[in-house]
Length: 200
Image 1 (tube, rainbow, N blue to C red):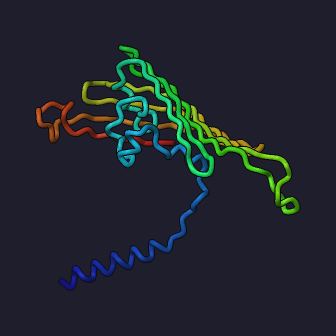
Image 2: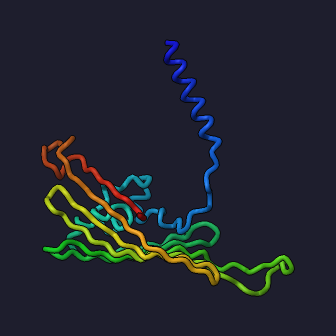
Image 3: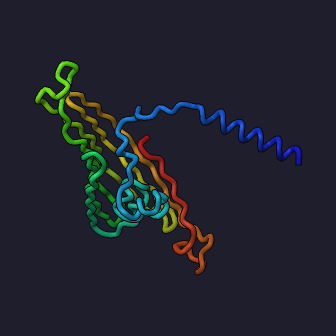
Protein backbone atom coordinates (compact mmCIF):
# COMPACT_ATOMS: atom_id res chain seq x y z
CA UNK A 1 0.00 0.00 0.00
CA UNK A 2 2.83 2.38 0.84
CA UNK A 3 4.56 1.46 -2.42
CA UNK A 4 1.43 2.33 -4.40
CA UNK A 5 1.17 5.74 -2.71
CA UNK A 6 4.84 6.49 -3.44
CA UNK A 7 4.41 5.53 -7.12
CA UNK A 8 1.35 7.78 -7.44
CA UNK A 9 3.19 10.71 -5.83
CA UNK A 10 6.13 10.18 -8.17
CA UNK A 11 3.87 10.09 -11.23
CA UNK A 12 1.95 13.21 -10.21
CA UNK A 13 5.17 15.10 -9.48
CA UNK A 14 6.57 14.14 -12.89
CA UNK A 15 3.37 15.37 -14.58
CA UNK A 16 3.59 18.72 -12.77
CA UNK A 17 7.18 19.31 -13.90
CA UNK A 18 6.32 18.24 -17.45
CA UNK A 19 3.49 20.81 -17.60
CA UNK A 20 5.98 23.65 -17.12
CA UNK A 21 7.60 22.89 -20.46
CA UNK A 22 7.05 25.65 -23.01
CA UNK A 23 5.90 24.46 -26.39
CA UNK A 24 6.92 26.15 -29.62
CA UNK A 25 3.41 27.27 -30.56
CA UNK A 26 3.06 28.97 -33.93
CA UNK A 27 6.51 28.01 -35.19
CA UNK A 28 5.46 25.26 -37.61
CA UNK A 29 4.98 25.95 -41.29
CA UNK A 30 2.10 24.78 -43.50
CA UNK A 31 -0.16 23.61 -40.65
CA UNK A 32 -2.94 22.90 -43.18
CA UNK A 33 -1.17 19.59 -43.92
CA UNK A 34 -2.51 18.39 -40.56
CA UNK A 35 -6.14 19.25 -41.35
CA UNK A 36 -8.12 16.17 -42.37
CA UNK A 37 -9.73 15.66 -45.75
CA UNK A 38 -13.28 14.38 -46.15
CA UNK A 39 -16.23 14.36 -43.80
CA UNK A 40 -15.98 10.68 -42.83
CA UNK A 41 -12.46 10.91 -41.38
CA UNK A 42 -13.08 14.24 -39.65
CA UNK A 43 -16.37 13.05 -38.11
CA UNK A 44 -14.51 10.09 -36.59
CA UNK A 45 -12.11 12.40 -34.77
CA UNK A 46 -9.41 11.68 -37.37
CA UNK A 47 -9.21 8.01 -36.33
CA UNK A 48 -9.38 6.93 -39.97
CA UNK A 49 -5.96 5.54 -40.90
CA UNK A 50 -7.13 1.91 -41.07
CA UNK A 51 -10.55 2.69 -42.58
CA UNK A 52 -9.77 5.01 -45.52
CA UNK A 53 -10.57 3.20 -48.77
CA UNK A 54 -11.46 6.07 -51.08
CA UNK A 55 -9.74 9.13 -52.54
CA UNK A 56 -9.40 10.77 -49.12
CA UNK A 57 -6.72 8.10 -48.50
CA UNK A 58 -4.31 10.57 -50.12
CA UNK A 59 -4.36 12.30 -46.72
CA UNK A 60 -5.15 9.52 -44.21
CA UNK A 61 -3.19 6.53 -45.49
CA UNK A 62 -2.04 6.19 -49.12
CA UNK A 63 -2.35 2.39 -48.98
CA UNK A 64 -6.14 2.79 -48.83
CA UNK A 65 -6.05 3.89 -52.47
CA UNK A 66 -5.39 0.24 -53.40
CA UNK A 67 -9.09 -0.42 -52.71
CA UNK A 68 -10.27 2.13 -55.28
CA UNK A 69 -11.58 -0.04 -58.14
CA UNK A 70 -12.62 2.64 -60.64
CA UNK A 71 -12.04 6.27 -61.55
CA UNK A 72 -12.83 8.59 -58.66
CA UNK A 73 -12.89 12.35 -58.02
CA UNK A 74 -13.34 14.31 -54.81
CA UNK A 75 -13.72 18.02 -54.11
CA UNK A 76 -13.87 19.80 -50.77
CA UNK A 77 -14.23 23.46 -49.83
CA UNK A 78 -14.17 24.49 -46.17
CA UNK A 79 -14.65 28.09 -44.96
CA UNK A 80 -12.69 28.52 -41.74
CA UNK A 81 -12.13 31.25 -39.16
CA UNK A 82 -11.43 34.95 -39.97
CA UNK A 83 -11.90 34.51 -43.72
CA UNK A 84 -9.43 31.64 -44.09
CA UNK A 85 -10.52 28.88 -46.49
CA UNK A 86 -9.17 25.42 -47.18
CA UNK A 87 -9.90 23.29 -50.22
CA UNK A 88 -8.98 19.96 -51.75
CA UNK A 89 -9.40 18.48 -55.22
CA UNK A 90 -8.24 15.05 -56.28
CA UNK A 91 -8.65 12.33 -58.88
CA UNK A 92 -7.69 8.65 -58.86
CA UNK A 93 -7.62 5.93 -61.46
CA UNK A 94 -7.17 2.21 -61.01
CA UNK A 95 -5.01 0.37 -63.55
CA UNK A 96 -5.82 -3.37 -63.28
CA UNK A 97 -2.29 -4.83 -63.23
CA UNK A 98 -0.26 -1.86 -61.98
CA UNK A 99 -2.31 -0.46 -59.07
CA UNK A 100 -3.97 2.88 -58.29
CA UNK A 101 -2.59 6.31 -59.19
CA UNK A 102 -3.94 9.54 -57.65
CA UNK A 103 -3.30 13.25 -57.97
CA UNK A 104 -4.46 15.81 -55.40
CA UNK A 105 -4.04 19.46 -54.52
CA UNK A 106 -4.70 20.98 -51.09
CA UNK A 107 -4.76 24.73 -50.44
CA UNK A 108 -5.15 27.12 -47.55
CA UNK A 109 -5.98 30.69 -48.58
CA UNK A 110 -5.52 33.32 -45.87
CA UNK A 111 -7.14 36.07 -47.96
CA UNK A 112 -5.91 39.65 -48.17
CA UNK A 113 -4.75 41.87 -45.31
CA UNK A 114 -4.11 45.61 -45.32
CA UNK A 115 -0.49 46.71 -44.99
CA UNK A 116 0.15 48.91 -41.94
CA UNK A 117 3.28 50.62 -40.65
CA UNK A 118 4.19 52.46 -37.45
CA UNK A 119 3.63 55.76 -39.25
CA UNK A 120 0.45 54.69 -41.10
CA UNK A 121 -1.42 52.50 -38.64
CA UNK A 122 -4.73 52.96 -40.44
CA UNK A 123 -3.20 51.36 -43.55
CA UNK A 124 -1.01 52.34 -46.48
CA UNK A 125 -3.60 51.51 -49.13
CA UNK A 126 -1.68 48.38 -50.08
CA UNK A 127 -2.69 44.80 -49.37
CA UNK A 128 -0.80 41.52 -49.10
CA UNK A 129 -2.01 37.94 -49.32
CA UNK A 130 -0.88 34.54 -48.10
CA UNK A 131 -1.45 31.15 -49.68
CA UNK A 132 -0.19 27.66 -48.86
CA UNK A 133 -0.65 24.69 -51.17
CA UNK A 134 0.53 21.10 -51.64
CA UNK A 135 0.41 19.00 -54.79
CA UNK A 136 0.36 15.24 -54.15
CA UNK A 137 1.06 12.30 -56.44
CA UNK A 138 0.19 8.89 -54.97
CA UNK A 139 0.59 5.24 -55.88
CA UNK A 140 -0.94 2.25 -54.07
CA UNK A 141 -1.20 -1.46 -54.68
CA UNK A 142 -2.44 -4.64 -53.02
CA UNK A 143 0.39 -7.17 -53.12
CA UNK A 144 -1.82 -9.93 -51.75
CA UNK A 145 -5.51 -9.82 -50.85
CA UNK A 146 -4.82 -8.98 -47.20
CA UNK A 147 -1.90 -6.53 -47.57
CA UNK A 148 -1.63 -3.19 -49.38
CA UNK A 149 0.96 -0.42 -49.42
CA UNK A 150 0.99 3.14 -50.70
CA UNK A 151 3.33 6.08 -51.16
CA UNK A 152 2.67 9.78 -51.76
CA UNK A 153 5.12 12.41 -52.94
CA UNK A 154 4.29 16.06 -52.20
CA UNK A 155 5.47 19.42 -53.44
CA UNK A 156 4.65 22.07 -50.81
CA UNK A 157 4.69 25.83 -51.27
CA UNK A 158 4.04 28.64 -48.78
CA UNK A 159 3.72 32.28 -49.83
CA UNK A 160 3.13 35.44 -47.82
CA UNK A 161 3.45 38.83 -49.50
CA UNK A 162 6.64 38.66 -51.61
CA UNK A 163 8.23 35.83 -49.60
CA UNK A 164 7.97 32.20 -50.69
CA UNK A 165 9.23 28.87 -49.33
CA UNK A 166 9.10 25.46 -51.01
CA UNK A 167 9.65 21.91 -49.77
CA UNK A 168 9.06 18.29 -50.68
CA UNK A 169 7.62 15.59 -48.42
CA UNK A 170 6.57 11.97 -48.54
CA UNK A 171 3.84 9.81 -46.99
CA UNK A 172 4.13 6.04 -46.55
CA UNK A 173 1.35 3.70 -45.53
CA UNK A 174 0.41 0.03 -45.18
CA UNK A 175 -2.84 -1.75 -44.41
CA UNK A 176 -3.18 -5.34 -43.19
CA UNK A 177 -6.49 -7.22 -43.02
CA UNK A 178 -6.55 -9.85 -40.29
CA UNK A 179 -9.05 -12.48 -39.18
CA UNK A 180 -8.98 -11.24 -35.55
CA UNK A 181 -12.49 -10.57 -34.21
CA UNK A 182 -13.99 -11.71 -37.52
CA UNK A 183 -17.54 -13.06 -37.07
CA UNK A 184 -17.26 -15.04 -40.30
CA UNK A 185 -13.61 -16.11 -39.92
CA UNK A 186 -12.69 -14.26 -43.14
CA UNK A 187 -9.89 -11.70 -43.20
CA UNK A 188 -11.99 -9.05 -44.96
CA UNK A 189 -14.45 -9.09 -42.02
CA UNK A 190 -11.81 -8.93 -39.28
CA UNK A 191 -9.62 -6.31 -37.65
CA UNK A 192 -7.75 -4.03 -40.06
CA UNK A 193 -4.38 -2.68 -38.98
CA UNK A 194 -3.26 0.54 -40.66
CA UNK A 195 -0.03 2.52 -40.36
CA UNK A 196 0.88 5.83 -41.95
CA UNK A 197 3.92 8.09 -41.80
CA UNK A 198 2.91 11.57 -42.98
CA UNK A 199 4.85 14.59 -44.24
CA UNK A 200 8.29 13.02 -43.85
